[in-house]
Image 1 (cartoon, helix red, strand yellow):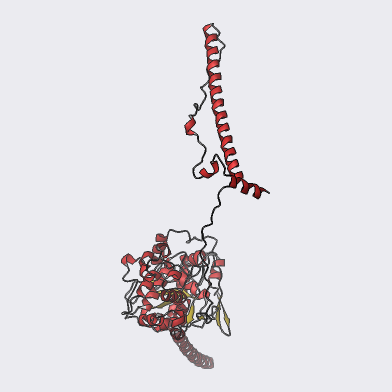
Image 2 (tube, helix red, strand yellow):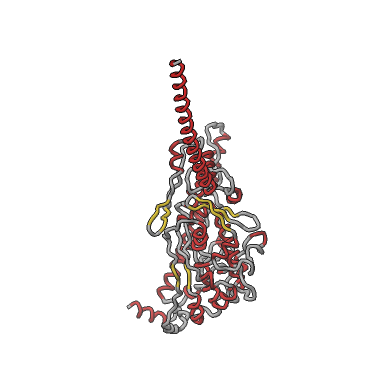
Length: 496
C-alpha cells in the first residue's frame, strides 16, 4: 500500500511538472509567434516601399548571372562622389568585362545607328545587360565610350544666356528690329533662361536617352544609375514655355529634312553673291546679329559659328515671319532627339537638360559647367573716315631708245641664223641618209650578205621658211631701219 501510495504521489508530481512546462512552452511559442508576425509585418512594409528597387536588383542579378566576380563587384560601384555642395559626378570610362568586346559606334553607318537608337528600349521590365551601373544596356556604355568620350567630339556645346532688354535698348547700335523679332517669336524667356549644368550628367543623358513615340512624347534616360523619364508637357513647364501654341518647324519640314542653304537668299542684301549664301556674316545686319544670339541660346554649336546649317536654316527663315510665334519647346525637344541620333554632332542644350534632371533626380548634383552670360560689344567711338586715294593712272611708256632698237635687230639676226643652221642640219641628215642607202644597195647587188638593214629616214622634214618668223607683233618701233638724228643724240646723251 505504501509503495503504491508513493508511486501515485510521484506520478502526481510528474504530471504537475509536465503541465507547468507545457504552459511555459505555450507562452514562449505564443510570444515567438507574435514576434514573427511583427517581423513579417515590418518586412512586408519594407518590401512594399522598395518593391521597384528589389525588382531592379533581381533583374540585375539575373542579367549578370554568367559574368565574372570582378564584373559583379564593379557593376555595383557608383560613379559619383558626395560633397557638401552636392553630388559630384565624375566622367570616367565604363566598367568592362573581359568577355565583351566594345563596339565603336562612331564608324557605324548613320542609318544603322539611328535604327539602333530607336530600338534601345530600357524602361519597364527591360533586362539589364550593361556592366557599368550608370547604364542599362551594353550598347549604352559603348555609345558613351565611342561617341560621347571620343577625343575628336565637341562634348557639350558652349551655352550662354543674355539680357534681351539690353539688346532692345541698344537696337540702333546692334541691329534695328532685333528686339521686335525676339518678342514676336516668343524667344525672350528662353534666351534669358539661366541654369548651370554638370557635363557628366549631360553625357549620360545623350548616351542613354530614348525618345518614345507615345502620345505624351516621353523621353527616358539614366542619371547616376537611376532610370528617369519626363513627358514633353513637363519639359515645357520646367522651361516656362507654352507647348501648345506656336509654329512647329520640324513637324512641317518636308520629309523631315531641313531646307537647303539657297533658301536663305531673302536674308541677304539684293544682288549679293551666290557663293556667300549660308554665311551669317554676309546677311542683312539685323539677321546677322540675330543668328549670333541664336547660336548661343537656341541652336548652340561648337567650332564654325558663321555657317548656317541643318534646321538653323528653317529657324532663320521663320524669323522673317512676324505674325506667328515659334513653338520653342517643340524645337528644342526635336533638336535634342536629332543630336542623340547623330554620331558627330555636338551635344547641346546642357542647361535645359540639367533642369529636367534636377526635377526628377535626388540628391542634388554639383555643377561643374557655369552658365555664363553674354553681352554684345559695340564701339562707341566713331572711326575717322579713310582719306580718299586718287585712282592710279596708267603709266606712260616712253618710246624705245637707240640701244633698245639695236638689241632688237641683233636678236632678230640671231634668230634667223639659228633658223638657217637648223635647216642646214636637216638637209645634211637627208643627204647622208640618201648616200648611205645608195652604198648599201650597191653592196647588196654585188652579193654581199653582211650589209646592215636600212635606217629610218630622218625626221622632221625640212621646215618651210614662212612657218618660222621672228615675233615682231607689237614691237614694230624696235625694228625701224633708219634712226632720226635727234633720237641718236638723245641716246648718246643718256649713255654719257
